[in-house]
Length: 292
Image: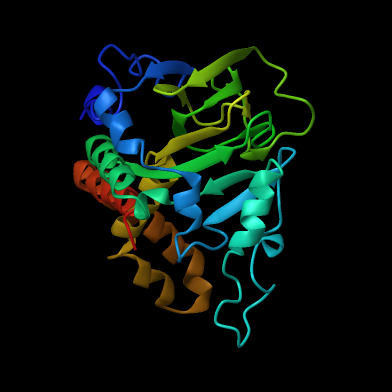
């Protein structure tokens, strides 16, 4: 499947995500039909979802994530059946004070998000989930950080200013918050309004702030199968018939047995049906974000 096919439910005709995929940041426009299906997503509605509790929901203030214990009823499991649930009064107070709310796996709570995520996952043969972010006016979201997945951030209410690396990092990088005031590379400045979106490849450093209006956006998070996943699948399949050899014979022959196993593994891997293995790894990835 092509990337264009994957996003035909989401992006408007002419949005160019093909050439940007995996390499550079790109602004997009959203199809009106997709936008209308997302209009019913509000932070008030999400905060009333009964199953909602950390880590499925979290809060950030001044760009930093708050500890889960600050937003729940009780700090640990107890005889109280509500212990660990989101304290909704406390959550509303945090929002009133300018805190950003992040609702993870929101595609499992909202049918319209689930339909779009499933469509993208099926077309790309990758996992796709959705996270909703709500940031009150004039307040920051998360500080500078890098994510390990492809992200398409769709603005559904208000507006938000983004500072984003122009290109995916070419050297080694790690996920999480950045140390310092930014990535030290070329940065683009985007302000997204309702109906606009931003594509960011894995590893691209970014931060965002609501403008003079509160902001709600949905991030579609896409994780392609990784090389390590395919490597592990190859080894697991190839080793089925030869692994027992390491457990046979006297200890003094361990090195000889290991050499034999190495040769047989190399031969077995060479004979594997790579297309079948890739389909298996893709299907595992696609199932990662299916509703529980």
